Image (cartoon, rainbow, N blue to C red; front, side):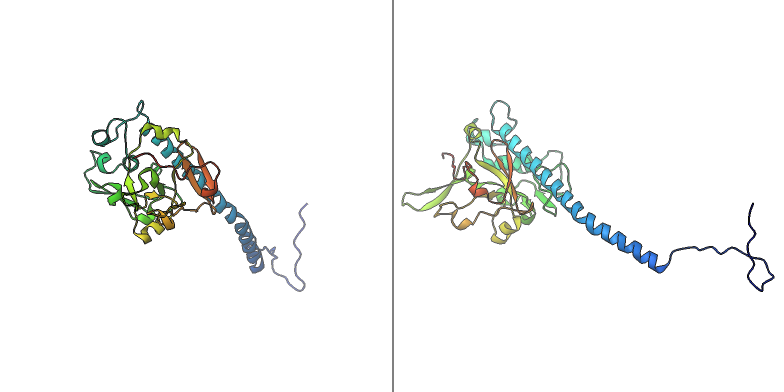
Amino acid sequence: MRRPARRPRGGNGPTFARTRSGFTLIEILVSLAVIAVLLALLLPALGKGMARARSFRCQMNLRSIAFDFTVFGDPAIRGTRGTDEATYGANRFSLETFIESGYRVDEFWPKEEPRSIVTRTADSDEDAMRCPGVPGDIQLRRSTPCRAGAVTPSQNVSFGFNSRLFRIETVDGRGRPRTVEVTLTPDILSRGLVPLAWDIDGASAARRGDVPHFSAPSLDSRGPYSGDRLWWPGLRHGGQGQFALIDGSVHSTASPLSRPGWQWGYQPHP
């Protein structure tokens, strides 16, 4: 049985039950504090998760590059090498030509593309020549080799390739150090522990005015490679960089020059 509402003392009018609506200021502040604490706990974990995703995607892109290099260098399964066969012979190719095939510039420019400059955005899922840890778009220029600025700006270039597979260091007839451009043969595929491509700091290359695609440590060089003038690894994955070897393996390390067995000093015969 429903109990009648009590009348206030001394009152003769109708009685209404008091109801409370909304939140008090203290309750709102407590709720905001709880949300702030949860965000403080979740955001670092979310940031780490995104960083791991970028690192994993970078590894996959480098693996793809190493695989494509194997196909490019294998005479039994390779596709087109642009003009290399006419220039160097059936069993020789240039590292620069391989890089251009990855970017689809110079002789690999799509025939159906009428534009002279094409922009690739940083969030493109189809671009294996990019590390997702490098922001900014790149521009590709028609009828331009990599060494002449086919891919710009330099600070947005993600990966560098072993310069000693493109220009070897030697001495001239007077004993002066210099570099000589070389081509590669299928034999390079048997050099599995030679570094092929890795994360670079394109901004460092841009400040020095160098082409970012070709990089190499100085090692014991007293010539053009001395002083690490072409060495700018990008250690952007938690203080580590990703390095792909010719055998197709990709490694994360902060000290690539001290990895046992890696053949940083290898140079092909001219």
